[in-house]
Image (cartoon, rainbow, N blue to C red):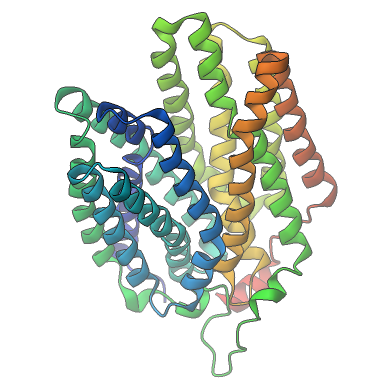
Length: 406
């Protein structure tokens, strides 16, 4: 059965409000804790602890979603945990409580992302998941942009603490939207990457068997290289711009964040549709190719307006990855019952690359300069592109397979 319009609208708004909620735990945490006269060392420890928990929690989080009987229930618990975390930040900004809140938020995020994709797959099935993921990316991008503006205004006109109060308030419409998603319309087997309900269902494969999936491991290696190159690129731009013109640095970086969000909102549904027509590899190659070009342009461009134009490439990459990463995982784990564990494996690879990126970029910048750092990051990104080109197979199933499992 096809999901009802009410359920699909509920998923749209749930994704939108979840993006709103998660925005409050970005740069606003540093602003808030700095306003509370925390040292940068303590702020760094909080962020490092959350990053470490998020890294090691990716695969267990995916496995938990695979084992759950109701992905909607898991998502609701994760939202409640984020609410408690935000209240902890606002009410008790002391080191032990903020540390506990940051760890709770990291753990909740490890299951919330996979749960949303699992709900989407369980509702629409493998044949329509590309378009659905594109729609999810559009609503998430719009939510991120609007929430950043609203929370920035609250922080400016009220106080930094108000950001976390707004986060808690946004959880209410998120839970209402989640309630609109009918649990009966989510095919639990399909949400885990297994075939739809049949009289005889094969049990899920053992978790260790998924580590023998060669295309999945190749894709994980490519994502590690991609995020090793990508994660430090925009912060490095911020440092370079600040050294050149500290007065305009904040505005330029804000523009560099907003421009990709607009591109993602515009392109994501198109990417989802084209993935069913072109296949996965052409779009993946476009997404991976944009990053080395962007790195090389950052190495030679200094004009603020041109920097914003270069960020269009970041939007193209983000639009592709928002759709293609979970879509490729769905392809590679089809019939295994371990779809969300597959997401966790890629999430771990992403986290490793992202965590090493800043250290690598900082070392290169300090010893060789910003231009060399950007060129080196571009070379790493080009390596990832080359592996996708030479080693990554097309994962789109044939029409007969899709029709038999729809």
